[in-house]
Image (cartoon, rainbow, N blue to C red; front, side, top):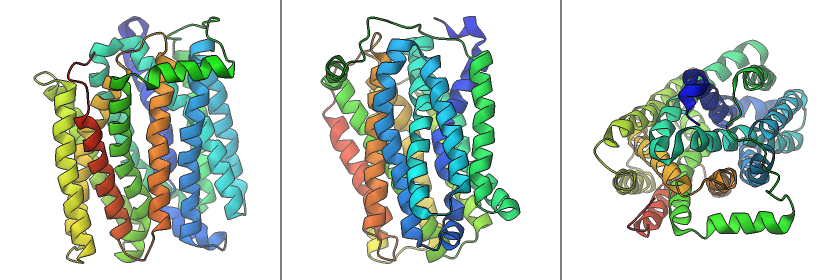
Length: 396
């Protein structure tokens, strides 16, 4: 089904907003970690676990949505997920316990999964494998804006309504997206009663996806590369605010600067794809990202780094990611049609599982320095490069 037949620009915007729910949910409350910890009478490290639980929720929840999207069509599971997200956002705003916040964030993540899985599957439905990499690059423009807007919006909300208001604003934003989905987003693939929701057929479908070498290699390469970003997200509040003394406004500006690298690279990727194949671009970008990650980690370990150098290296690191994500995502999903929903779910689940692991590692190895964040970022890029080197020579 061509997107142009269904008011393509509006469809694209809605898909972009759905894709941005997860990133916005992560980035918007990062400047408030210290305020949340003080309000709930706990440590920043404890509050960081709410980020980890969010990643765990996204990783596990996407596995659930895949078969639902293939069985009932794209819109019904998506709408249910958005309703869950809105309800738990209100729960996060009203909680007075750090442990409850961690639980609510997990359930909130389960709700956000619908938007993430459905948007990827609908890109595959509307545009097909040939144009998907370019569309994913365009979606990165919307996704990439969230790290620029979210911390700034979060800081503004905190200055007026304290940290509780952050989650209320998320609930309002998602309510608007829900209304757009209900009234303006066309169904890209109808219900398929032939798709079973029994455990054995579901596992068989996922195994069918997972065992395909092209999916396996590019899903893990993209997931591990993305995990470097999540390690940065988990560690940057402590490194930038506590270690280097940035205030909330300055942290938001640095976040915006670094996010601009991701946006710029993802848009350059569209033009590179006119001359080079997706697998070529992704491989070169991962070589660059691995080298940058190693330099960053080495400078942090030897204490030869300062704030401007750190910002510059992270800028280049995430710039490389802007070339990796669109291409690995498109390559991983390209072989699938009937199981596009399951493939999208498994792809996102693997990515977020890696993200949950890396954000947890940053918290676990927290030692009052920038080394845990930098070391995990470097390790993620290196492992991603190892995976992509094992990619099949011929891809679909």
